[in-house]
Structure formats: structure tokens, C-alpha cells
Length: 351
Image (cartoon, rainbow, N blue to C red):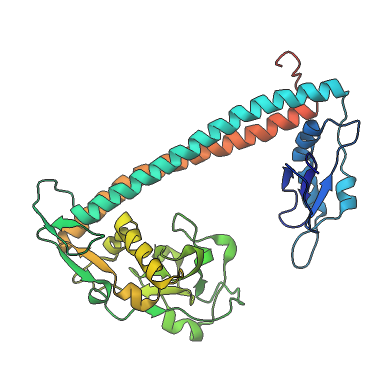
């Protein structure tokens, strides 16, 4: 019923919410209806702190889980009800302030990301010289481009045909063998996650080994359209079947420029049109091969690349700093709730 506390007893164990109406719940949730001695909102704040104890008792072969009895065994201090109401009112007000600050910082990150995309888009479609004459690219989603630039399909600037990755199960975990790169191994910053390492035997990996400058393109699912430039710091690596490898002809095009192009809003406009035509979010190697890219002279590509490396690094540093602020606010929120419900701070005067 409305007001019941809903606690996840299966992974992620401890996720917590308050029911806003009557629901039927599955086995992954348990409903907690505070007794007469508990103020519901105070109980919510108590649970938000003591639920972390469930991680220590969670077990399971397929996923972590706890029992309703283990939830019932959680202990907490129980002040008089008028103090519970006072603490809950204090926390309602103070956590609302923190949540508002977090929301503002998240919005700032969105704005910085938009600025980053706009900066990249202008650089790879208009160049760095605002006085250069423009011409119609002949491609609707590209618009006008510098008069001395060309437009070519991706397959015409590739060293070899675009290639799908290995359709193999990720069963091996041998650090002496090539790392098996899957789309889930790469975070939103384009870096490899260390906690998802998998490998393939050398003889299977050989046709799919990556070289410096290889660009990986995601071909389906929630990550479709995302691209990742292989870094030599990844070590010897191959790639999985839901990725497509583009290997550029360095005589006409730098892989870094193409990588930046795939971060532009122009590229994502093309991708959206591709989805509409295909009706499902799946982009084949053939479709990627027919992507039209802008092509400045090599020297200008390198200038644009250097400019974008420098300017995006500044924006990335700002985004990282804002994220750090968000994490500190979240930590403070948790500490404040814990201190209030355990009586470590007296909130009566504050209320």
C-alpha cells in the first residue's frame, strides 16, 4: 500500500524506495510497513543507512540475495516519536538542498558535454578558419563545408574493408593472451575497464588483432554508433563480434580525425536517419562503409586534431571536477543521514 517501504532483496541488494500507491511486488522486493513505534519517513532514513549491512550477508550463485528474515534482523536506534519526526523533518529539508545542488551539477555536466560536441562539430565540418569560403557539401546533414575540403565515403578512406569482430564466448581470463575487447569493456570516456578483463587464445585472436589507429564502431544495441579509438596502452588486444573495425588509409586520412568526426552532431544526425530507414537500431559494416565524412588536407586534419585534443581536454577536466563535487555531495548526504538517525548530531535547534 502507499507509504510502504520497498527494499530490493536481490541484486542490487538494498535499493530502497517508498510506494506511492498499492502495488503487487515480486520476489525481488520485500515490503516494510513501519509499526506504530516508527514514523514512516524516519524509518526510511534509518533503512537508507542500515541497508548497507545486507551486503555482508548477501549470497547466491547467480546473483546476490538476502532473505526477508535477514532484513527483519536489521537493528537501529529508536528515539521517541516526536524526535523521529524532528529528525525526519530536518533530513527532508537538508537532503532536498543537497539533491538540488547535485541536480545543478548534473545539468552543468550536460551543458559542458553539449559545448564539447558543438566544438567538435564545428571543427570537423567548418574547420578552424572562420574566413575560409564555404561550399555546399551535397549532403543534407553536413551542410556547407570549406571550399577546399572533400567529402568521401568511409570505405574510400579505409586501408581495407571494414571487419566484424570474433564471434566467440568470453570464457578465458589469461593475462598472457590477447585481451578480448567487448563493448561493455569500454567506459563512457573511451577507457578500458580493468574489472571486466577477458582474453582469447592467440590462434583465435590473430585475425582480429588491433593495431594503432584502429577505430572500433558499435553495431547494435544500446551502444550502437559509439566509437572507440584503440590505444596501444591497452596492450595486445582483439575485438568481439558486436564491434566493427575501421582501419584508415593514413595517406589520405588520420584515424584521430575520423574518431572526432564520429563524436560530432553531424555524425549522429546521419545515424538517426539510418535508424529510421532500418527501423531497428542496428548498423552493419556496409552501412558504416557508406558513411560520408569530411576530408580536409592531411596537414589541416592534424591541426584540427591538435586543437581538439587541447580544448576537449580542458572540458573533460571540468567535467571530472564537477563529477568529483557530485560524489562528495553524495558522501556528505549519506554521512548526514547516518549522523542524524544515530543521534550524533542534535537537530532540534536546527529544525
